Amino acid sequence: MTECAREREMLDVVAAGRWPHSCDDELRSHVPQCEICLDLVEVMTALSGDRATTSPLPRIPSAGLMWWRAQMRMRRHATGSARRRIVALHSIAVALAAIAAIAVLAPMIAASPLPAGLSASVREGIALETLTGPLALSFLGIIALFALAPLAAWIAISDR
Image (cartoon, rainbow, N blue to C red; front, top):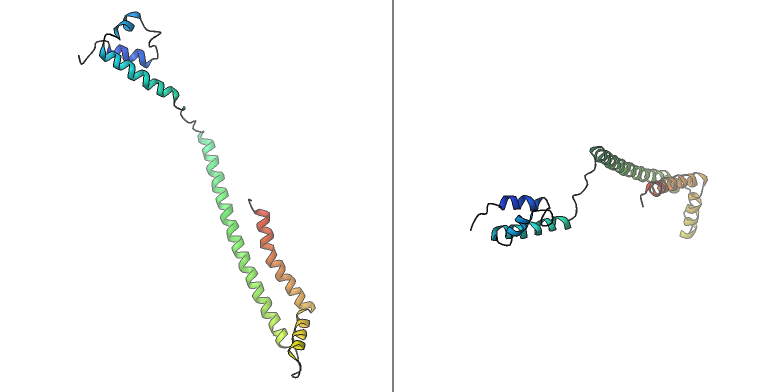
């Protein structure tokens, strides 16, 4: 037997979830006698049981919420990109300030009048005295300010 006249009816009853409690007695008595309908009931109840145990479909957020999230993601990306550029430019500025300070302080140290007969330790002391002058200290303070400013900015805007 390859076909059953009640196969379509049986398919509708099982798909609607009316098997076996909400269908007529005639159909219920037909299933144990018909091999095709018995197989159909077994397969369909197994499939519907699997469907009931699987997780429900995921809830898709609204288009407005998805657009807002995309805008926030783009804004965060743009902010991070700008922040990286600013830190890079600030680091370059610090390096240039350090080079400029060295360029200003080196001639001051080299031009200091030192007698030829002084020992090396005395020469180092005089050079150190030249470095501790008010102009040299102000340059060193500016260099320290430029060096610590990126660190302070990084701590202030850090996400960690």
